[in-house]
Length: 574
Image 1 (cartoon, rainbow, N blue to C red):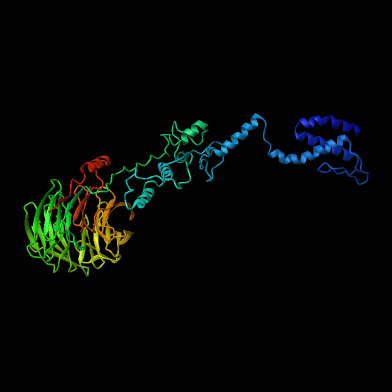
Image 2: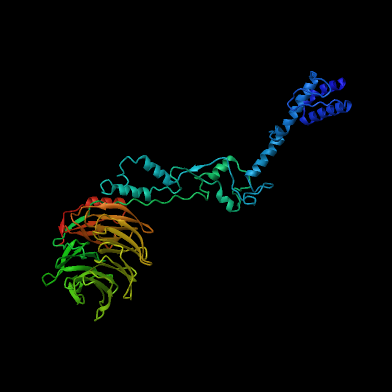
């Protein structure tokens, strides 16, 4: 036995330098031989390397070789757990571990496991780098927040506007809104998401092929022109110069201060017609010439409404009078063509549809007059109980909108004598009516002093898309033919004009307010080129505002023309 202990002592250095498996076999062999040699010896070796205890033999001090064997046995129990987490220290083992981990990160390689959906290559490549990117909206918003304490006059001259804060809110909501989610979080590009859906082509990168760090960076870089995930930046809307003062002012003495009348219209031949009590005056915007067209002979028979015909020459003018007549005038010849009767009271509103002119009266009746037929009355509409002060045909001539002093808005269909929709949403007289030129079935209506709201309607189903409280009496509305905008004129209490931008789905944003009139702005008309709005107010002035978009002139050119022209004095239309 002592010889065997010496033999195990000779193998001990070998166990320390070689694998633990050989050590375990040596220790097991020595233990089995001892038990077979001395069956009465029932010794237990504790796992923590403690003392040996026997049932028959008294405790003895362990020898040095036995102590070493107990230490080896204790190490053997913990080696099972350490062997699974052991890091290989040979080149071949390290290479094998690296290949296995690469296969798990790069589905689609031969021998790799399937992706999360059960098919090889279904999961995207997960690299060890994220390339952040910022869209133009995030940069603009950051710059806006950084300079929010500075004046914003360099963007658009809004500091002089009464609605400065509204303009800044509009700028933030419509222009500086980021397109990539939260403006406080940088958006991270999904790595190579476009390659998972399309097969690799010649010369392109594949998900199944290893990628170098440099090629991985080039494939994820936002500046790479060949990357399909890089979206081209959205083209910004060019800045448009909006003057805050009128281009021209004309005096209009004896302009009747009556909310229910319609005394202003601009023809396609660039001639402006305005009614001053019993007279109608024409102003040629091309030549700046003024002429008197007519004057009613009866005392008190004032002109109550005007509307130019839709023929290309624009030489026919319909005139409504206080005694209930609708007169047709040939402006080029300067003579009256015919007078059409039928109303029992004044004609407050007129609207053309081809060769038919419709008239609304204080007697609450709407009449259709065919100017070609000897019997001009071809239809009557009964849907109001008080004066019809607003009347507009849609551009397609399929629908007619009428508003009255009974706070009712009616939508009529052509060739039908009953209204399709009768709406009672407004709380005051409905005079301001305007059809959208770029969207079918979109109508804007405005209410009087007790209402002060602009409502946008879908006339296809009668639904109100939106309503805006303007804080003032709404007198007239004009849509722009170049941009998604419209202008509204107001009376009590601010007497201003407001330019609105239509954002779709009924949403509108206030762009700018224009002041200058000293009384309520009762009437508006638009120039034939769609760039200028003329407003007529109870202060007996006409003001020309070049605020709508121009299809040919740039913002710099318009600003130069406005500063060079000025007002050139105040002329009288009479």
